[in-house]
Figure 1 (cartoon, rainbow, N blue to C red):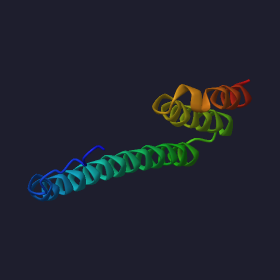
Figure 2: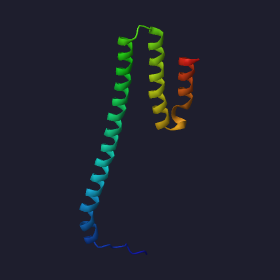
Figure 3: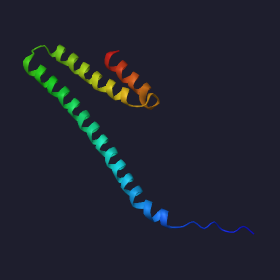
Figure 4: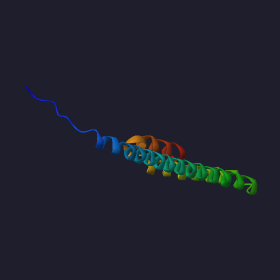
Length: 102
């Protein structure tokens, strides 16, 4: 017969609030990083759209504006590809670039 292990409950009682606070702080920091990345991505896309709008207003050459639009799209798409895992969308990225510039 094996006797059950009996542990005192005092260490668990004293350490659980500290572990709970540590978990909350780590979660909040994680959400803050995610929110910052999302706002940076939105700002980059907005600046790209503004650049294309300004080019469309100030230029009469529609072919050059379309070329600039493709270049801005390619920049945003390349940043997205670099930030994601290579296994995730490398082939899709290559197909999209080839269809846009092929």
